[in-house]
Length: 189
Image 1 (cartoon, rainbow, N blue to C red):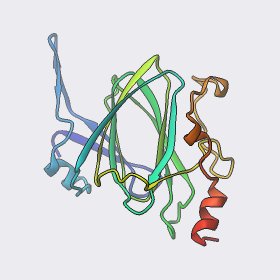
Image 2 (cartoon, rainbow, N blue to C red; image 1 turned 30 degrees about the vertical axis):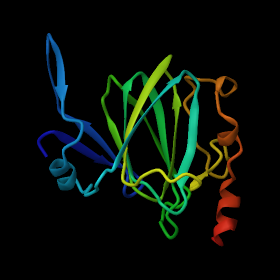
Image 3 (cartoon, helix red, strand yellow; image 1 turned 135 degrees about the horizontal axis):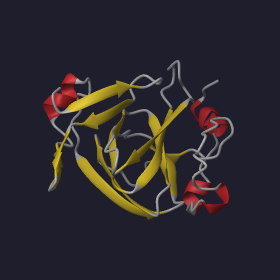
Image 4 (tube, rainbow, N blue to C red; image 1 turned 90 degrees about the horizontal axis):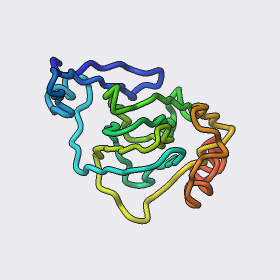
């Protein structure tokens, strides 16, 4: 693993990856993905789709998942800064319903690996952010699921760099189900 360092998180399966950055007065170079390095780090995935989005300060996207075709994701920020969050939805996991968040930015160049079985979302805390991510499965229209970003049963602590009154959340993301509704729908106690 010469090109990346990997930190595990309190929630099993989540990993924070920091690439080796080679820079000089002209700029920098880094490998953002190398299958062999990631496999050695315990991320033996085939990524089949790359996505990128651009958002302005206060945009909150989440908390998303695919119901029948779950996706593992490798996310990073290539411009600006976001607070990125994953919620464990793996039934039977000792951390089921728990969340983990971290700041991803163009400056820190960290990446976040989120395996299948998690809801995912982020809040833009810079003026603008460009967010790029790899997925382990293709997007399937009509398979979208989500949880409310502000559900007290989950208790995500969004950073105070953006006041909740400034959040820019689309109607779909405002109206996702609660965690209790999610569990009831799946027959989970």
